[in-house]
Length: 464
Image (cartoon, rainbow, N blue to C red; front, side, top):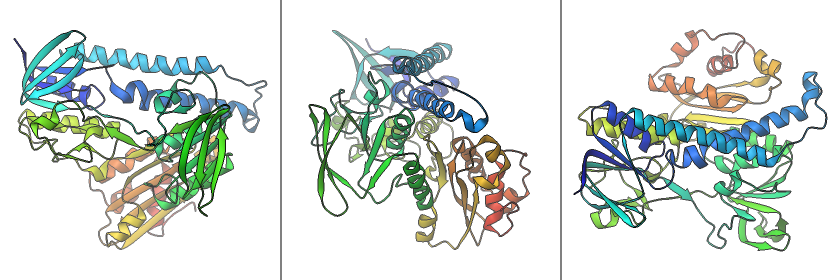
């Protein structure tokens, strides 16, 4: 006999477990199936433990530069095993927290490998045992995994994915990072601050290619100043373990191929959705390059089958997955939620300096035919930034000149991943430049730069 539920969720990442909690709140009988650890990649192997590592490297950087704050810190060093252990403990603490939330919300947790066997039916393999589940609705929240290079699979020794890079047993001396998206830049920042000689190879013309061009240019200069070698417009034609580490064949802009040896390499060239071998093909669920096709509520083309998170495509972000989960569950429960608006999803890179953005870049807004008002305010004009010793960076805002709509906001500098939410809320509320100008910002704060950037778009900036 199968266990019956109103909803079964396949995958317990930030999309799956949040959807399960909301479903329980709405009175649905819900089960969640997980093959590894509650919390998924984000909590256990992604967002959270990497931030713990980056916090360590940030503090290490400050300790090495203590004199600039009038402090003394002699013989500064680190214990790599303890650095990694702290990161894993942070992930473990939150994993336990998700377990507690499942219990609190009376969500049935089924451990094992789940497969959708028919509409409304799942089979969960638990070693030699199989558990059958039935539900009117099934949400697929199986996430994604790191993409391998076609000519070099990660071995966990000298060729790493993000998982390997989070639990190093030795510190790289000379590190190659392949790809300059958020994951690549974050690991480059961490290992550079911890003392490794870091090189980033990026096939596209600029690093952080999805960000505003001015932000990319600023980050290029900032990371180069920190000692990171940036090779943009550069391809990788080979990567193989060698006696002294890993040898890369790097094709430079001029077409010349150069062999260079590194102690380690991190492959950060994107992700692959986990849609194989879970029964979707037999049901006829439509996919696009492996990603499940959904509408604005998470519905697939097959009645009763829903999908959320990384498995549905870009942007591959935890907060996007969580919000999609809530929308899907509220629709399943008979509510009338707003459809997902991807234009209001913030993107964050937790490097040093940080990068954050929401909405259109200036170039995209121009391509869309908008007449623009663009404001920009530098960190050097902000009292709090100077007092913190963090005077590098800027805030940029892009407005529709005709309506005053905030089309996009782009930031680079200290703590901008916290500041961006102000602009996200503004866009969600369809705020114009008038409301933002008339808002009182506390002094002294970094957030004052947000105000000044808006004022600057209309020629009214006070402090710059």
